[in-house]
Image 1 (cartoon, one colour):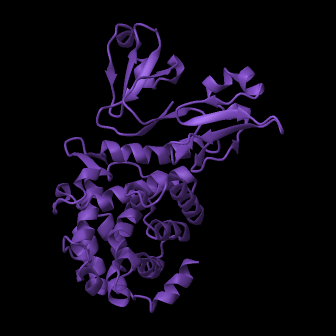
Image 2 (cartoon, one colour; image 1 turned 135 degrees about the vertical axis):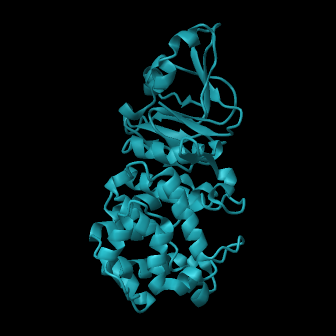
Image 3 (cartoon, helix red, strand yellow; image 1 turned 180 degrees about the vertical axis):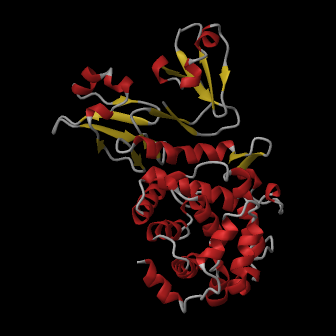
Amino acid sequence: MWHKVSEMIGKPNKLSFPRAELDKVLNSSDYAPEALVAMFEKDLGKKFNADSGVREKYSIKRHTLMVMGQFEKYFSGRELPAGMSKNFFRTFLALHDIGKSDAIKKTGDRKNQHRYTVGIMSSVLKQLGFREHETKIALVLVSEDVIGGYIRGHHSGKNATEDLTKMAGDAGLPFYDFLKLLLVFYQVDAGSYTADAGGLKSLDHLFVFDKGKGQMDFSVDVAARVDQLKIYAEELPNVMWLDDHDWHDIPYDNLKAWVKAKKDDLDSGEIIKGNTFSYRRNLSDGKYQVQLSRNIKEALYTPHSMLLLDHNWHDLVYDDLKEWVKKNRERLESGEELKGRMFRYRLNQKTGKYQVRLSSRVKEALYSH
């Protein structure tokens, strides 16, 4: 598929250096992103020095170096998902926007960059002798910005996971491995449009940075949305997005525990209503079903989660508490409220029930246990 894209874009970009020279730069004890970009500039200088078409007025080279800098600061000390080689990922990042200038020049729209980048990157990686499997992953990573679209609200959760499932398949990776790798790419790419990366403030609200610990993460509201993608991946195949108000068949084992406790009511034909979903047994065919509540447009259904949309306390059983909360059981039982980044926990002293609620800064989050 990808070699056909490369042929459509135009003539391949001939490199003047062999793989051995690239490896020498990558394996240097004093490796620096500037040295890697300088190597590619020998043959792709015009593309790197072109304007990237963003309001910050960065050249493609400057943006690329900021992206690579974020990777070195926050991810180079960790193992990458899917067994991805750090040196290959560094090479990938150096080329991740290489088609943007062609997109602007030929179509007038930088948003068309992905197909031009795929074409150039495919040619360059092939000449450098990288493995087909690695190249395929790289090309899929730059083919579409699903994470950005989802965070900005342009993609629903259902559409995002459908797109990600296809991309993971094209990359030849399990869904969760691909998602984790794509999230690393998104964080260093979008995270370059921040003061932390040495540029102008722009997307700073999406992230939190801890330079001392060498960690970056999504800001709490963004993390709440991204966590839904992670929960989807973790719960496969017992998970589904609902974005309509039809009844959907569900195996009995995939009902939530509190719904199972009302099996007799379900089996008699009664509809059981929760905050996010309603449940019934279709007496005509005997199948259990779930339906999205009328006031909710979309929600992720799993047997072990609940969508929190307010700051009220919600009951849950001890087994459904997070592990770190269980380890602090004595503090809960003494009446102390435990505070996490996204959720708070307590033991209601009047009812004796464990409870969870959203932290004050969070508007909506999926609690999974």
